Image 1 (cartoon, rainbow, N blue to C red):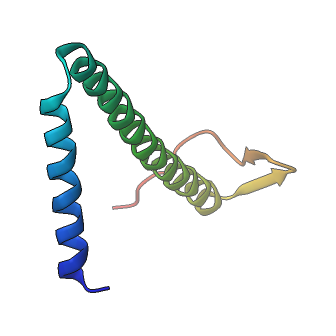
Image 2: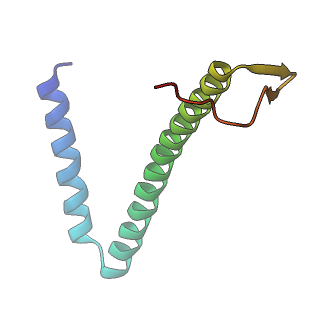
Length: 91
C-alpha cells in the first residue's frame, strides 16, 4: 500500500464522518462532538504524561550525576555528602 492510497483513505474517512455529522440531529452532533473532545483530551493527557516522565527521569539522572561528582558515600539508596558546604571556587 502506497502513501497516496493511505492519504486517500484518510481523506475519504474524514469526508464520510463529516457527511454523517451533517445528517444527524443537533443532539447526536453535540454528543459526538463531546465524545471527540474526550478522546482528544485523553490522547493529549497521555502525551503529556510521557513527556513528564521523561523530564523526571532526566532530572533524576542529573541529580545523581551531581551527587557523584561532589564526593560522598552511598549507604544503600541514601547519599551522605562529605560536607554540606559548597566547595570554594579558586581564582
